[in-house]
Length: 381
Image 1 (tube, rainbow, N blue to C red):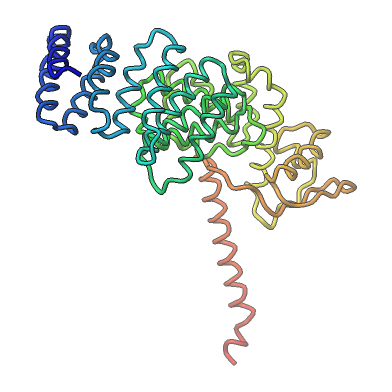
Image 2: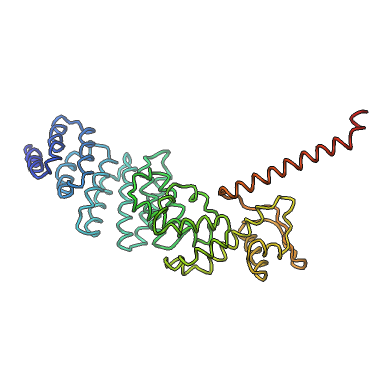
């Protein structure tokens, strides 16, 4: 490249830059001439992060950044490329652009950057509905990630985000739920704008409810992302999750009118009733002390508000799912439960546990007093 090409190009970019960003463009040439690659990279990332830089991102990346790409942190090179790719005219053009970046950083020394770029390629293929190709890219990225001892959280976050998007598109709710929560664990949720937080909380809530393998919402109920639904038109969905957690069929009946607002929930309406009935059953068992968990079907029906003819099937379903452990006496219509799956407790449930502990403490004291009374002669001897 002509020795004057870069200075001339930067002079053009300086004139094209918004007035409030021209000082950053001025620093490009200064750092470039002094070969201060780290500082140059940082100021480029800062410039690209401004929305006003949008028209200049692709020219700057192709003409300027690529001229010294081997000298800078490859992860930041990919980051600059991803920001520049937002200005491609469509996803087809974006796919070509990002594929070239992935190929460029596919070296033994920069596999983290390769994963970062590969996941971005998978994201575009996902939007183009080429699901098989997207899955292939994600599997490739996952194999490399599993071989790392450590990697920047931004790489893990990007993988979990796109992996979650894939499973959401394929309606694999449990896998979406898992990967979406892992994505949130890799980021500061304050970096998401309010709309993004609400959408993520909404999608997670729906996935948790309709999944046939998620019966414990503890991790989601404790996550601050769920608070983004408070005081929004979707607040009912948060309330519904908490109703499911405590097995509150009365609250479910009140909130059930909102289910029609979501197609997936409406399609799974019968399953949702079965699921909250299971939650009501486990809550009923949990509230009872361990020595008092032999319950008649009639008692279970009365406490859970589930129809008597559904109780036996409900208990068998809970046992098969591992929510309870125990046995059923079909002749006597008695369920003997010796274990219930732990779950997150709300304040009311914690208060019930406090009362049980007080009862246990009282019974221990009574037992101690009785032993002391009947054993006085033995102690005296």
